[in-house]
Length: 307
Length: 147
Image (cartoon, rainbow over all chains, first blue to last red; front, side, top):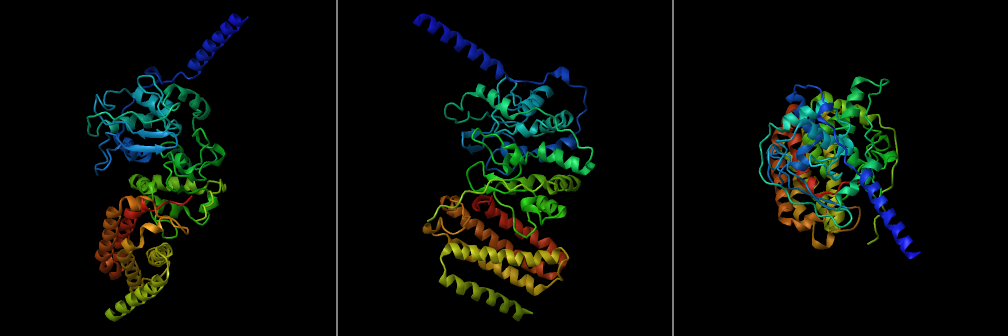
């Protein structure tokens, strides 16, 4: 009797593991899915600034933002991530990657070795970037200087250090759904929606997250605690930005000055460094989209502890 | 003109100084920052064409910011890390030398851009973004953002 139970338990375990293995299989985009493409480096540069690559991937504590050798430490509730080298170095960076591998990394969160990336890399937003834009971005990245040296592994406690489990996380939070344009809206609004939800990845900071670290979809853009535990990120729906015009929002994105002559602070200063490099038309498009976000209150910030 | 500048600076300095003499550092620095914003808004209104260009008001703004920069390093004693609605990041006390250096850089930016700012509306439009970036220098690392 006991032996039969043990046998059943063993079979269940094997079946469970097989199911887990199947469910968490990393997805990829094959080269055969890609048509011929001539890279547009000017567009690639625009995508580079819109996506904010340098803010995480540039070598820290030095002023040259085109040196994408990685190394920055990102604190999170799940441990500390060390940002990898994405310079054009063929050995330590992505210089030897193919277009398909780059697209796979940004839209599926899968490495060329077939492993899951951690969603500290915001592929939940980057999955919405069109393939042509990704190929232009990749071509532009390869024009930037090679930086030798690979970065140390992340410092994550068990069970977060088991990469394979991210396959389950992706089933929950990486919907893979495209971002189709809204024909009832203007071309400018649609461009803004694309820039914000794709390369801009604004929701990744400006939304609250659940216990598993996934963005709470119904509360997108309502702000929340800062991902690195320092202070908070504001609500940018019309609940908070009612008095701001589109021109005010575009001004903030260019200069960092808010509608009431305050300055954006914290990580937003770095965002403005990037978005100020976009065309004025792209900033106006982003502003048009942000201005259209319906008012949602979101979570109230936790009350301050009495002294 | 010169006398007006001195009077404006004195007025700001005395009033803020009087307030400081009575308050704890957290409230003092919060009040300084609020006053900074009030003056910034006045100046920005001119830049937006919502108010006429007024060199006296520009003087008052720059006097306020210069006063803040000079007082900042002494307004963060060890016992003022929490309290009130203050948004001072703990990093200030971990990097006090860098914080003080950035306050000095802010003072320098204010001093270097005062004449240009009060010279004309175009001068103001050129000078204010430079001062703004000097504000960002501290705010990026040392002011916590609000939700």
